[in-house]
Length: 482
Ligand code: C2O
Ligand code: CU
Ligand code: CU
Image 1 (tube, rainbow, N blue to C red):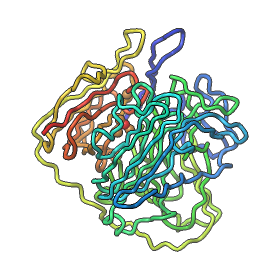
Image 2 (image 1 turned 90 degrees about the vertical axis):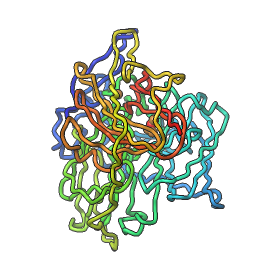
Image 3 (image 1 turned 90 degrees about the horizontal axis):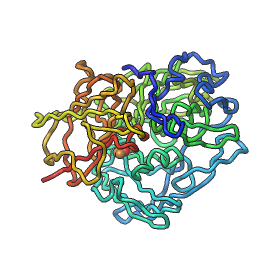
Image 4 (image 1 turned 135 degrees about the horizontal axis):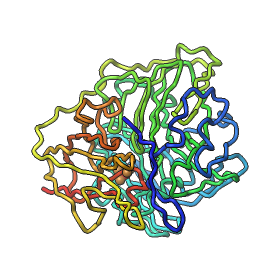
């Protein structure tokens, strides 16, 4: 998988506009940073600021919300509100949040038990909420034109008729999604099911969601949104710059999410093994040892890390190619009755596919604004790109035609998880395993996926999950019909 170090842009008003490759400035930086500094930071134009001393702050675990009522439906209220975050201690900066938290509160839902969340918009601009990876009716999907006006509120209904998985919720307001998500409108939504619970994987305080993303902080610690993603050279784990996280000598489940609007993380850790147990849509058939985990924007991977063989006092750094991300500090003993069974959850068998389609993503940079295209067309809410019969199985061949520009994309479809059949004519990579809803597309490397829409009828999106690209129209819609 190549990440394409070439950047391309078009000048608008003297400003270099997207698209850009995700980490060109840092791609050549070795992962052998000893933790002494932010290797890779300060290299991109304008990013000359090194943020504090790494590992001084502790990584928080986002607060879990308790349902307001539990009469058949778990109900929650989440204000969408401006707030202040402190990425640099003592230097508060305005952000947009769910319930005042830069990483929104976590919802833990149960398979088969509906959730209703009332979101109230206390921002000055429109917003809406999309449950990424959720099987939800069109009305609750956060369709880009279906907005919550400032001052208004809206109920979103999540039936949770799907298996356990690490999902996330984020803004999807048309044209604003990149900025809104960047400024903090993102949170975890974890679905749990009984069969998964019976496996006895690490749980409770040992089941820790970790949201990874990037940020551009100026010399005053202010979070800056520019249209030049390579400037975002600071890495946040659960909203904190390169933190440490105390762990016990036992197994943990970490649910990694790449919520950066435009970046690929390549994660490595020395001294312990990473065992992947789940991807976007839930459990893998069996645990998979991973030496490196690659997550494109919006992808998730759940891994188990066993610290039981590590001496107290040991510090283990999780690295991205751009430098250190997070340090695990082994501080204490703890009981561990959890296990990682040799088999987890078989994937459903693949039905024969009735329809083959090609979806090609590409930028048109010939005009004053970049235009994102899929099959030669930019997003138009009034156009249905194609219809799919509910219950039928299709194969989609995904192309990233930005070979000359060397721009990566990630492909995401709403409503259903899919399976990756092959990548560049070869078997899928380890990062493609399981039930996916987002895949990385390297320039010129076709990826074939098999998808079956089984739930709701209506219009659903597919798009590049580099949100600066969807903002520019790299998005289409499929209508699920009877
Ligand atoms: Cu994560 Cu259309 O979105
Ligand atoms: Cu989605
Ligand atoms: Cu893209």
